Amino acid sequence: MKKFLSLVLALAMILSVASMSLAEGFSGEVKVWVAEATVDFTTAQIEAFKAEHPEYADMKVTVQAVGEGDAASNMITDVEGGADIYGFAQDQLARLVAAGALEVVEENNAAVVEAENDAGSVAAVKMGDVMYAYPMTSDNGYFLYYDKSVVTDPSSLEAILADCEKAGKNFYMEINSGWYQTAFFFGAGATLTYDSDEDGNLVKMNCNYASDEGVKALKSIIKLAQSPAFVNGSSASNATNIGAIVDGTWDAVALQGMLGENFAATKLPTVDGYQLGGFGGFKMLGVKPQIDEAKLAACDALAAYLTSYDVQLARYNAVQWGPSNLKAQKDPAVTENIALAALAEQLAYTMPQGQYPGEYWSLATALGDDVIADKLDNASDEDLLKTLQDFEATAGTYVK
Image (cartoon, rainbow, N blue to C red; front, side, top):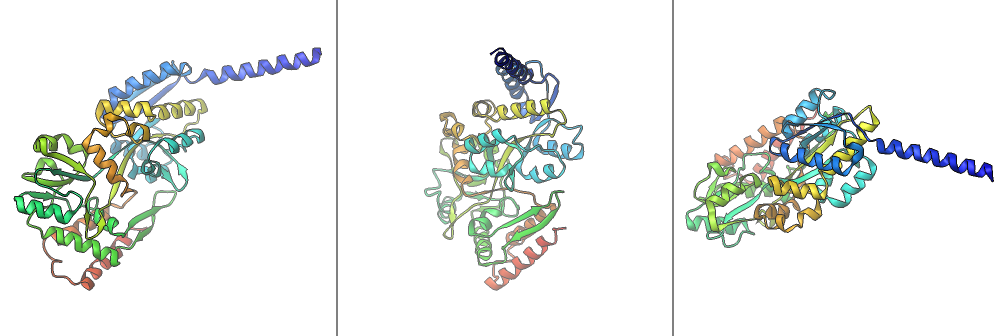
């Protein structure tokens, strides 16, 4: 009996020590990079995290203003000197993984991410089946803003153009941009993506622009450019006499001011029988690999907290960043946002923007410029197919 009691006491001591070890948390330094607009918000949320998790109460967190684009470039240049937790856009994922700047998301946290965030944002934080970051927003994409006193049927591009022409109003879309141009190609069933190896090199192009689907898309772009209402552009600051414009959430306030009580927004329309698609964009938080396991656990816990339902909703209320969290998306404060509601509709028809070579954007601009210059107006389907064959062949040369 005494031997049994001794074993029980020994086991209790072991469990007590283990419990104390787990509760010790981490009291070292952690560096966080976020966009300037969210520095104060993030700082306040970190204090709330520390209050909820006493084991991290003494953790010293420094929050610095480094935007998503700069954060990725800085991390790739100097992983060791970079932040422990940082925000970035989905098109930087492959480069950051190749640079060794992202820790795989902890298994339990990954399960929560899968269950609580929309499918697009979950796909955006993965390479293959491996999750490398925490979704933070689903709010970077384009959709249709329109003047509801002019546009009677926003679901059809043909109808929108007819209404704008009749009213003497402008329809804006940037068809010489590789970002907006994909609305037609992806919508018609064509695709253009690149695969990367573990070092971040582009090793394969997946493209079928030179196809019936590609020709259909190009013909739709040409037809749009021929409308008297068409103006090439996507910026509210450069737009006048707007009947409708394809733009993003960043211009919502400006457009609401311009259109007043006639301000409206919805997903992109259909054209020639297909739904316009395109790219969707997402912001996410990454955690840098750590030698210190206690620090890694602290960073994982903090990143998970900063991308949780409560914080995503609070971030929307503070700076209007659209949440990726499904529950937060259904909050009345979010659903009543006309621009975010339109984007949420459109994201169902988009794909996350992956890694593209710089030359792709120039190639897409050249194609759009030819359309704007009326160089393809009288081209036959065979000529258009040849144009897209040349486009596809050139895009393939960017693979190393």
